[in-house]
Length: 233
Image (cartoon, rainbow, N blue to C red; front, side, top):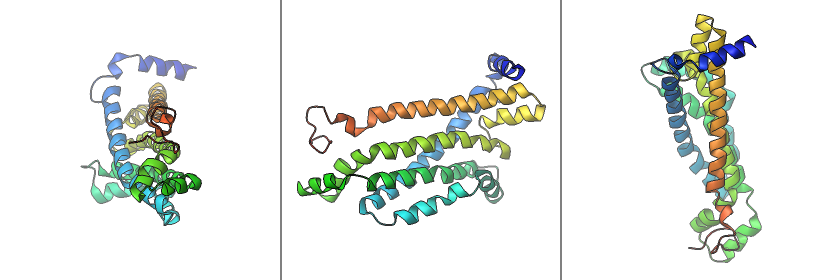
C-alpha cells in the first residue's frame, strides 16, 4: 500500500504538474504524438481498406502487409528509425506509432465492408444507386460500427504504446516513469503508470461516445430514413 499512497501523494503535489518535466507538459507531448500518429494512420489505412472492401479484392494482402507493423516490436522500430533519422526530429516516434496503429484500422475497415449484408447491397443496386452512392449511403453506414471499433482500438493502442518514446529520449508521459526508475522513486513510477492507464481509459470512453453520436444507423428511425437505414437526400 505504500507505493499506492506514495503515488497518490505524488499526483496531488502541485509542483509535479508544472514546469517542463511536469505532468501537464508531458501530457501535451503525449497527446501530440498520439494525435499526429493516429491522424496519419487514418489517412493511410481507411481509404485503402474501404475501397478494397468495397470491391472485395486485395484485402488479404493489405491486411498481411499492415500486420508487419504489429509483428515487429515498436521499440525495435523506434530504435532503428532513431539511428536512421536522428533524435532532432519527432518522426521516429510518429512513424513507429503509425506502423502500430495501421493494422487494426485496415483489418476492421476491410472486414466491416465485406460483412455488409449483400441482400441490402443488391436491393440498393436495384434501386438504381451508382457505385459511389452504394458505398457512401449503404455500405459505409452499415460497416461503421466495425470500422469505428478499429479506430477506437488503434487510438487506445497508440496512447499506450507512445509511452515507449521516453525510452529513446523523447517526451510524453513515459518520461515520468523513466525518471522515476532513474531516481529510484517507486511512487513516481506508479504515478506515471496510473496517468497512462487513466488517459487510455479516457480515450476509450471518448471514442465510445463519439461512436454513438456519429453512427449513421442511429438515424434509421428518424423521419426521412429509408429502408436501407440511411437518410434520404
